[in-house]
Length: 117
Length: 113
Image (tube, rainbow over all chains, first blue to last red; front, side):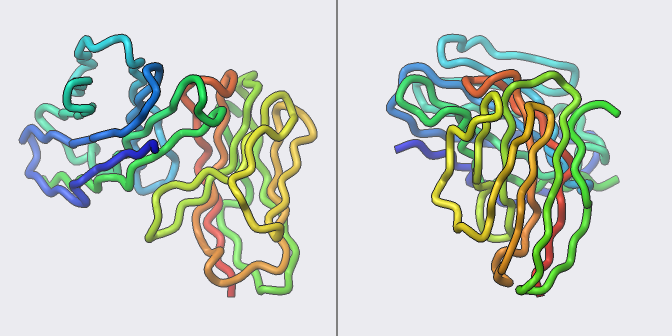
């Protein structure tokens, strides 16, 4: 069965600290995609990244970086030098390939990040 | 306007009312989705439409009725709701259903009295 676990319910850091949000997934498919979304207080989910199961290269985008490790079924997200504007709920999600429901993004429960000045 | 828009942003209704939520996407996408986000559960996919045809219905109660008249518009018709249906209802779109990132609207905060 497919599942996404975000064990950290809430994290609080002080501005400029680095913070890592954990994501562990379960799937039987060999073809799948992983995503991270940000949900600020306004409510709209903002797409951050998509990674397919065949590409284990880590990715960096500005202060954001992602570490995908198939061996541990993890897709962790690190924010470097956090800022107050990073405060939001972050969701990790999984979309399976063949055999999975079309368009079915399976979300974790989210991690609420609070960055204090 | 650009992106995905939803109206209304807030809705309060009684259990006997009938109301509709509207979603519109200006991205030229072929797939649209309804999600429910409540306080105690992860985001739940409710309906998926691809090229105006429903391809997924995750056992949603019949008091929720979707309608997709064209690839740019999606409605969620509500009737005889229960207080536990109070939640944030999010609409999303993607170029197609497989593998693509979905782009979300701001949501409708629904309160059922």
